[in-house]
Length: 132
Image (cartoon, rainbow, N blue to C red; front, side):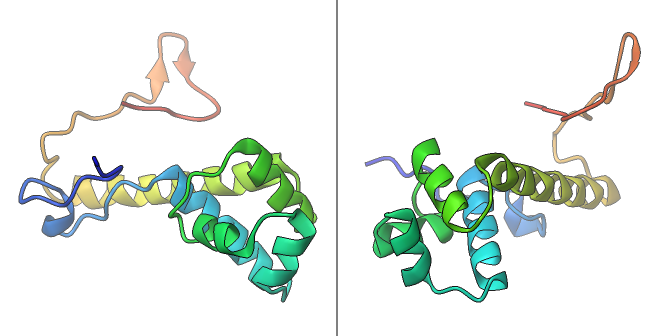
């Protein structure tokens, strides 16, 4: 079996003090758990309302499972949110974590990473910045 996230090595940025690259499943799970707790609801309650097993919903919240869009939509609806709400909140978190990584990296060495261009030929790009 090949792990989805390789085990850390000496070449990974994390040992040098940089946080690891966030995974989408972690961010979405974080949003679902935060929203559930903010509503004062139990995992059992949301599980029953969404018709998702409590064990699976727990795994999704902890970022252990990559849930399908149908599962995410059901969990979101059980929390009174839309799928778009959950994805937007996860996207906002991704942007803030990425900005923190960029600031941390720019304070020291670039670690072999090239800077991300934020302007295009016609000027600044709006919307979401995706970089490889």
